[in-house]
Length: 94
Image 1 (spheres, rainbow, N blue to C red):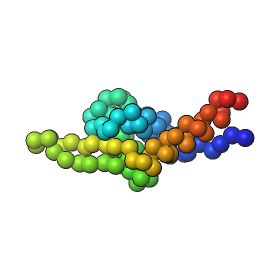
Image 2 (cartoon, rainbow, N blue to C red; image 1 turned 90 degrees about the vertical axis):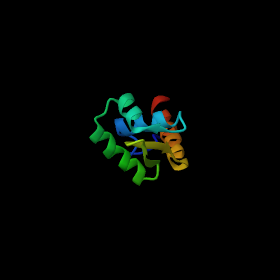
Image 3 (spheres, rainbow, N blue to C red; image 1 turned 135 degrees about the vertical axis):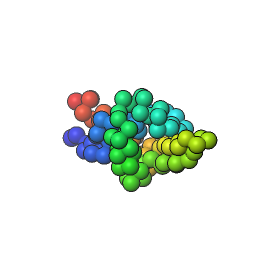
């Protein structure tokens, strides 16, 4: 039996963001945009969806006069990612 894939993480960009964040303590918005190739607007919308789900925490600060948005994967986000990978493996192993 195939396990259901988490629809929130099944989005290509959201999955890419979570995949990046699972390997680092934190990442700023510019880094995530560069790594994913997403537009700033699309990345912002997808980060908001992940934050509303409790998967990502977002901290907005300033570096000097420049705004800086730092993202971190929450424990709930790590658990959701692990469950997503386990569910995906049920498709691969068949």
